Every structure is written in structure tokens, then in C-alpha cells.
Amino acid sequence: MKAFFGILLYLYFAFSQLVSIPTVTAPIKPIDNINGGDPFIVEDNGKTFYTYTTGGNISIKQITSFEDVTALSEKTIFTEGNNGVVRDIWAPEIHKIGDKWYIVSCALFDSSVVPRGTMPEGSVNELHDDYYRYGFVLESKTQDIMGEYEFKGFLAPDGMNNIDGTYLMDNGKLYYVCSAYLGVGHQCIYITLMDNPYTINENTDGQIISKPFYAWEKKGWNVNEGPAVLYTNDDTYIVYSASGYSSGEYCLGMLTLNGDDVMKKSSWIKCPVSVFNKQPEKSLYHPGHCSFLYKDNGDIYMVYHGTDNVDFFAKSRCTYISKLEFCFGFPVFK
Image 1 (cartoon, rainbow, N blue to C red):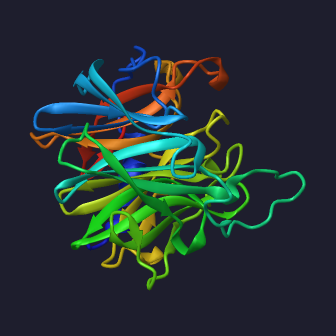
Image 2: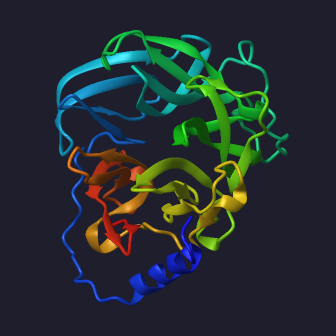
């Protein structure tokens, strides 16, 4: 896509390690210090909407602004116990595709409702129920983001168990990007073609485009999860979370599209260093699972979760937001 793109990418990160940037020691303040697991913010017609992981349902809040989560109204869209969903409703996202809104999320399903996934058998030390954990999609019945939704089905690309699904648009085609399991506790970033926002294309094999490879992706346990698609001008990135969420080394990595076929692993360049990490000097720990908010003036904000406590289990995750900057055309996360 760009001549010497990969070389420039590596030079950029090398440069960022050397350039002198004033140190800011003031704590980073969350916009929501009570809730915030897997946060997602979207704007529509001058209004701002906010959702996040609650575990038992999917709720949407209309909030005062993207920097003020004071709720003006709130509606529960979906709850566990419906359509075969048992529990663990995680990482809801709200996307406008055509004239409808789509909520893509994931959950643990009843084993009598969905088939057992293709996740390999676990050993006696790897007991879990992820064989029935899948993404799923809700479609709005109207153009009202806070209106009624219909359950459209679960998503099992190539029969794989998966979490943290999102959408990627490229050359007029829609793709499902998620964290799928190649082995127990070994989550990878997976992409597959869709026929529509709730149907996986059955005639195209998906592709693993990122596996935990570098040491910073393997702290605690091997993880690539929480993919978020970032569009900047003509460039496309996938920013994902790496390492165990409670390991103390949870961080963000980045893939850069450098080819014409998003379904080819060779089209994606993985940055060899993490792009966003804990910042103890700013009282920010366990940062991860980001999404992106695109403002009408062209600004892009990263929404993510983290905590202000080094002990992950000391309190709930919070929602943070920060404006993206760019250096030599590449996104800078800070």
C-alpha cells in the first residue's frame, strides 16, 4: 500500500523511544470510575451513546457527552436467559450499517441450543466451558438506536468458539473480526467474510491474522483479544489487547494493513512492540480492550478500560478516553 511501509513503521516506533517528550505525572482520570469493562461510545445526530460489559445484559445509555457519562436516559436491550444465552454477555458494540443499528456481542450459550465448538479438548488442568462461547448479533427494528432489537443468531466462523467480535469494512465488503481459540487459553485474532452483519459467509475460509508471538503478548498467558478496527485516511489498523487481563501486563498491540486482501495474514504487519501500556506514573494500570470514536471534525478518540489500582481485583474497571495523535502519519496512543 505504501512503499517501504513496514520499514517506516519500525523506524517510527524506534524514533518514539528516542524523542524527548515532556513527562506528565498527573493521574489520568477516567470518565467513568465505576463501570467500564470493554467500553464502547458512538455518536448519532448530535447525541452520544455508551455501552459496556455488565455480564448479565446489554444496556445503552444516552450520555451528556463523550467526556461526561452522566446518563440522560438508559435502556436495557437484551438480557441473559433469552435466545439460549446463559451468562457472560461481554464486549457489546453498536454499529450503524445501512439504515439499521447492529449490536455485536458475545456470551456463553446453553449447550442444548448451540453446537459444541471446534475448540480443542482441554487437559485436566484446563477445565472450562468455552466450547459454547460465541459471538451474536442483534438488529434494530427501526433507525432508533434506543429502540427495539431482534436477535439474529450466534456467530461461529468455521465452527470456532470466539469472543470480542467487531466489524471491518474494506472495499465494500464486510468482515467479522474476533478473538478465536486455536487451543485452550490461546486466543488469536481471526477474520472472516460476512454475507451481511449477522451471517458468516460459508464459502470462504477464515484466517488467523495474529497469534501471540512476542514476549509482551504472553504475560500471564498467551492472548490476542479485543480487536478494534481503526481507519485513518486510507489506512486500516487493528488494535488488539495482549497478555492476560489480570497479569499486570495487559497492553495494546497493533496490526497494519499493508496489502490488498484483508483475509491474508501476509497483508497485516504486526508492530514488534506494544503500542499502549500501563503508566504507573499516571496511576493507570491494566489498560486494554479499546474502541474508537470518530468525531465530525475529524478527531479520533480511543475509548478503553483500565484501573487506577495496581491490584486488578481491588476495584472494578473504569472507562478512559484519549485523543489520538499522529506522528509521520502513524497513530500515537497516549
